[in-house]
Amino acid sequence: MRILLTGATGYIGKRLLPVLVHKGHHVTCVVRDKKRAAFGTTIEKSIDIIEADLLNKQSLQKIPEDIDIAYYLVHSMSDSRDYAEQEKLSAINFREQINKTTTKQVIYLSGIVNDQSLSKHLKSRLNVEQELAKGDYALTTLRAGIIIGSGSASFEIIRDLVEKLPVMVAPKWLKTRCQPIAISDVIRFLELSINNPAVFNKSFDIGGNEILTYKQMLLRFAKVRGLKRRIISVPVMTPRLSSYWLYFVTSTSYKLATTLVDSMRVEVIARDDELNQLFKLQLLSYEESLQQAFKKIEQNEIISSWKDSFVSGQLHGQVSDFINVPKFGCFKDVRIAETPSAENTIEKIWQIGGENGWYYGNRLWKFRGFMDKVAGGVGLRRGRTNMHTISAGDAIDFWRVIYANKKEGRLLLYAEMKIPGEVWLEFKIRNKQLIQAITFRPKGLWGRIYWYLFKPFRSFVFKRMIANIVKC
Image: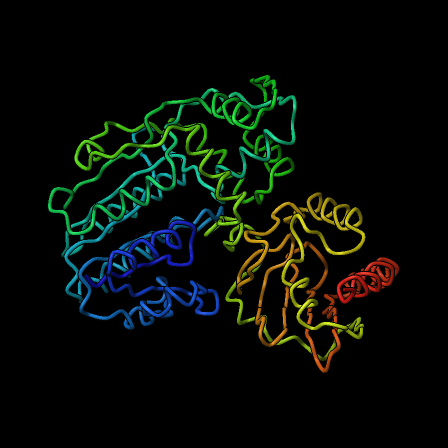
């Protein structure tokens, strides 16, 4: 079948795409930025990629007319004042364009909305569903709660809390109940819903086979990891304090933390298991989903991570907007080193950041990340999704990958730190030499003061960093 997949570079879309291709479907991926659409050579031979923005009606005209099934996996966790309106407009634009095609069914992944007092985030999800339901096609809505899988926001936040804090003084919303579901089960529900008349024009809640409080989820996580943890709930922590608590302890951004805290106060429990009765699936338990996630992490097989989404950082626009490093009105720190082995040097560059560190002064890098976190930035806790591959749009600690070409021997990063200016860090191999360049475009007087203030740090760290990178 001919399938349209929106959100193809997102956490769910990246995992659903290979399943659809393996089943023999022809998939047209809708992405906002083609430079971020790195799906692997095997998959890319079997798909089409079109660049379109759901907020731009004209760009949606690129969607082909001969579509059978369309997936709506576009989602925003932003806390901007108008994000609900933007989500609604995106749904309207999508519906109107799909009405011009031969699409029989639209499959939409939403959130469980069975509480009268919905969070802003869940209310927006429901509004999107209502707009999509007005189309000239059969709408199938799958409503999920907490999704557990390697790289998911929920999994990474739980992981940060449990592995970093032996004793947790936590908000009272830890007593809120939810129904976590494994990411692999979500993908199976999405795939089995294709062209199935039994699910046309219906909504289904999908959840695992256990109802747990957030506190129980944390303690069970500790059990799986063989850790002893104590959790003390306090009733006095406000939503804002809760958001700061998550922000400083975990790798989440403050924007995502506020949205999550707002949602965590609402119970997300499936109404029934009607869809599972229809498909007759054996769902993973919460602990089994955790074990599956850690197996993927240990084998370095994380397909997608929430940390690579733009909501995790400070970048606005497309990565291509930052690919041209400015030359005028900038400060530069360029270092060149002979490399005995270009291949070895490139391999080391491609493993930079995350658990592997930055080849020199890792404690100083961590301190810089802590300073950024205090200033409201992303800090150094995002790490990286895969220790061997890098694609445009990926997050590496407090950097965003703008350009990555291993054959060319060039990696360009853009800083998402809270700084009075913009910073690019570039590595490139030329004539058996490694060129390491920092470009800083200051904003006002404070930008210039910042550059000179951190000159000792740069001279001390980056000189030794390039020396260690080229060392065999």
